[in-house]
Structures are given as structure tokens and as C-alpha cells.
Length: 252
Ligand SMILES: C[S@@+](CC[C@H](N)C(=O)[O-])C[C@H]1O[C@@H](n2cnc3c(N)ncnc32)[C@H](O)[C@@H]1O
Image 1: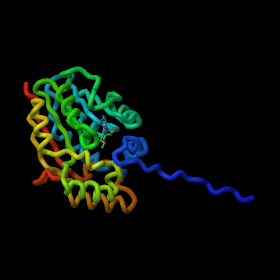
Image 2: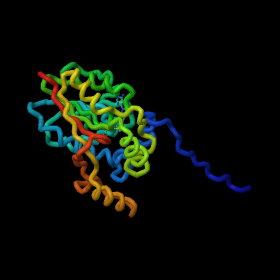
Image 3: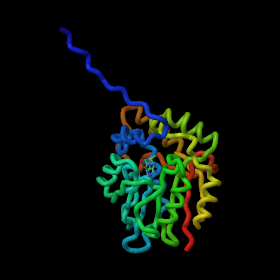
Image 4: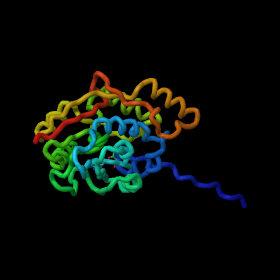
């Protein structure tokens, strides 16, 4: 009798933005040449917006922290880093990287009003059905004078083309991770933050072209190597039409 051929389970196909994708991709978070590579580059650029803590015991609340990719870039800045996320498999990795983790929804965070010196929301708003509730929650968590830093994708045709139709065909972004119907209109975000007393300033950003091409070429040759200072930089660009950062303080 012939041995039965081994049966391999095909990867399950989930709807766009289904949070279970993060469980399926759990092994990718900290792989330097993995599907979340660009999140590492963005985390460094986000951390550059965060000044050193202005007081002992300052708290940074990282909404939608994922596997804690921001953590290494905050080293030496003096914050207690608390991460909030829905995905337990990601939080386990964040905890292993020194983040104090809270399993919960960024729209209803079990932390006290005004507890945070900094709230970060990196690549989160474009994954949440009601991003306005996340903004309200960030404002509630921030102490007067506290800082909000974020990055997200704009709700434009160009953003759909670049981030989904092109980006998700490259190895730097998982395919199907975005639902473009959730992308965040930059003007509406600024207005919503203003309603909550946060003076949000935006700037467009993009990955460096040469650095990204070199990274893709390295990866095609068999590996991009460890996450290093040589990874592509996220740099300012003239337009917020695709990817943008926001930084603003809550009025005192
Ligand atoms: C694209 S990842 C970004 C992760 C991290 N901020 C980073 O830049 O590496 C989006 C993360 O948001 C989380 N997430 C999505 N919706 C959420 C919600 N309503 N509340 C908390 N976390 C959420 C997902 O589980 C995932 O870890």
C-alpha cells in the first residue's frame, strides 16, 4: 500500500482587515525581512517625534501596539511604555520586548483619564471601524499638555492605489491587511483632534526610494538581515495624500 501524500493546510483567506490576520502573521512581527518590515521603519520615525520624558515616571500609552515594535526606539527616553492591543499573540511578543501590555480595545482603554504624557497610535486608525472613538480615547488619556503622535493612511484614491494595489504586492506589507474604506481623511482627523483640544500638525511621509529598493534587492538575494540603522528611512514628503504623521499637544 502506498503512503498517503502529506496533506498541507492552505493558509486561510480572511476578509480585508480581519484582526485574525495578526494571529496568522504572528511569526512575522519581529522578522526583519518579514511581512511587517515597513512597520519597523515607521516605528523609528514615530519615535523620532517623541521627546525625552519631561518628568520621572512619565507614561507613554501605545494604542494598537502590536508586537511592541516601538519599544527599541524609545530606549533611553525615560518612559514607562504601556501597550494596548486586541491581539493577544502580538501582546505576548510586546511583553517579551519590555512593554507592559493591556489586552483591550483602543476605543475603550482601561486606564485613567489624564494618565499619559504621550499617546502613540501608529498604523492603527486605518484599521478601526470608528477612528473618531480612538481620537476621543487618546484625548481622554492625555494629561493637559500631553503629546499625541500617530501615523496613518489618507482616504484618497492615490492612497488606495499606492498602499493597497501596489504596497500589498510588495513583501513589506501583508496582502489583505487593509480595508481602504477605513482610511482616514487627513482634514477630518485634524478637525476631530481640534474638537478634543489637540492641535494636530500633519506631514506627509514615505519610505526612502533608494533605501527601499536596496532592501528589496537584499531580500530577493535571500534575506534583509537584522533590523539595523541601515534599514530604509521614513522621510518627509510634500504631500499627505498617502501616508502621513501627526503630532499635537492636548491643550492645558
Ligand atoms: C498595522 S498594526 C500596527 C501595530 C503597531 N502600532 C506598529 O506600528 O507596529 C495594527 C494593530 O492594531 C491592532 N488593532 C486593530 N484594531 C484595534 C482596536 N480597536 N483596539 C486595539 N488594537 C487594535 C491590531 O491587533 C494590530 O496589532
